[in-house]
Image (cartoon, rainbow, N blue to C red):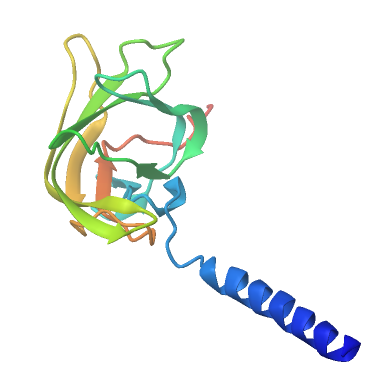
Length: 181
């Protein structure tokens, strides 16, 4: 009789453990790591050879216009970007500052027009947002020096897989050190 009770208790405990373990699944990642981003790579076109060359910015600060969000804060040696697009608007505006302390007017503004489409992910996550890039443009503010030369959309869908969405081409800057004669 005692053995029967022990076997019954062991079965109840094992059954409860299996049901608890199987009910917790990691299939639905509702965290910010699951949020789609716009992935960008920086390039420049060599004026002589017209070749596309990967570019690296010495210093970059990026703010989202209309918010107090700082996406990058004085990041050094930047050659790729992950930028979040707004859920509440069909346009996201980023302000690029290249050296805010020494050159406060060295600013570019990047405008992204996107389509936000909500979809039901799951009971745990609720609704998520699919974002497709419809268009881009860049500009600068008065009294600023525009560094961006052109933009090219490669993939319109913002994603979590680090698939490149946008190529940002900067104006060519000769990086060869001056020769001393």
